[in-house]
Image (tube, rainbow, N blue to C red; front, top):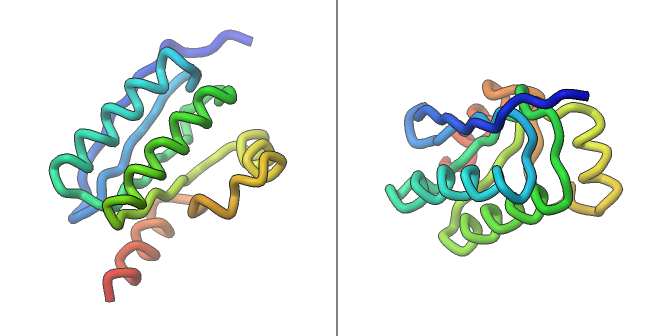
Length: 120
């Protein structure tokens, strides 16, 4: 299986950063993802959605980077959500017992609706 070169982009929707990792999330690319999320957190955003639609693979080190992002956001009173995860990725999170630590949504719209309701 050939994977795409890793890229990470993001956009803002109101007070939410939506981050798009693309490719294989591992030890090398995980730092890019952490930096992108950290950049938004440093700018004062406390809600981050990671859209995994174009993420080919996530290895254990990639998952550890996601845990770091979640811990940093929780310390700041923030929330991390995941959308559009492939079944294999979601199954891995479930097998590792990590689904209780993250919020999962089928798409960005559902995540944005849930995050908007949280501020009320």
